[in-house]
Image 1: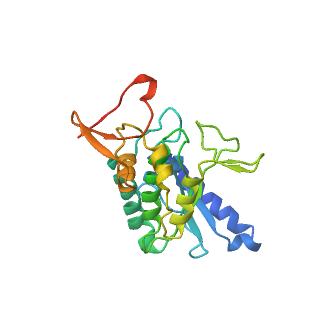
Image 2: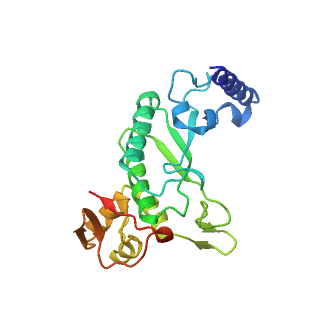
Image 3: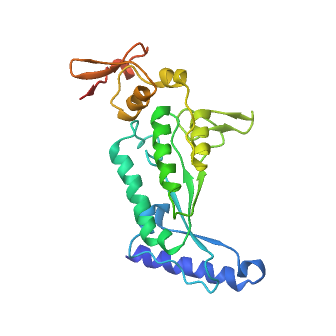
Length: 238
């Protein structure tokens, strides 16, 4: 409670200070952040949006990394549990903000690149589907590290003007327009593992016509090369 009280007082002071300077600051939009930028911390009874003498010019801001924000805590599989968390996030934002015609800005969202790309794509498709639902005024910015590596959020090399994992980027851009980016069968086949504990990649491959077969109570993607990480064979047990 003490942390919230300090933050609420701080946010109110910032808004009052900006407005008091006059000029464009008297009417400009101001973004308001909660503790650690998490949606859970701006949708509870302890967080208070500042009072503002200028009407409808405050925008709550959050960050969201559905499958983890660091190499240490990132999850390699997009699960139903993660999907339900995304749904709850937007349901809570509906109650507190969208239903009151208050927009929300997701200023950082994304996935570390060492997460399998089909898992990242399927997660962002569901995330953007929630963003685009009627009655939600929501803007999204993708977090991107300046120097691309396999274990960070680097999707654009600004020194060499090169994009990485463009299918992931295009999925987000298409979804922002309410469309689904058409992944090629070759791309899905190339990126679907021979065996997987990740249901989303398996389902994507299956929808694209990827061959599946049962063996010893496990589902396999047939005719796709590859091996388990560090020699470990991971099977999806049905």
